[in-house]
Image (cartoon, rainbow, N blue to C red; front, side, top):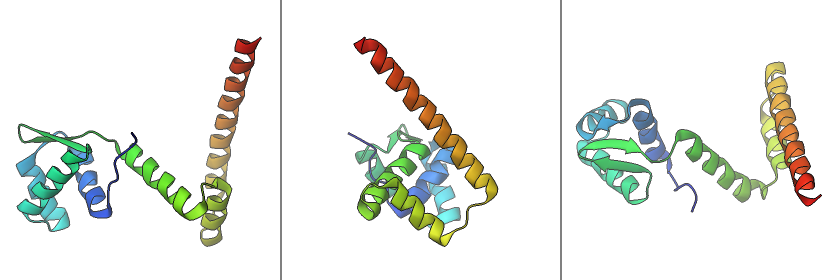
Length: 133
């Protein structure tokens, strides 16, 4: 099915949850009041909405996430890539780097990531060739 959509204010709520889970819903409502200025009823409404969409679980007044921060971020990036850059990673990177210079460390880290991906792709290709032969 894929990762459920998490909207901006829900994401800010999830950041608090991920940092503190598992957490009692009363304590979570208190934290949301302190950090987001939300009323208790607003927090409970968001918990209910996210529960219905399969993002969180509220069981015996203890709230836990069903979706990780990494999963939500990856889904958001995929949506942005498709909607704005027609799925093109080079177009995304070109647009990103027009506005923000990459440090030498950034470039090195990105190169390492690409080299790792290329190595994994090569291994997969080799395995596929072996299974054919």
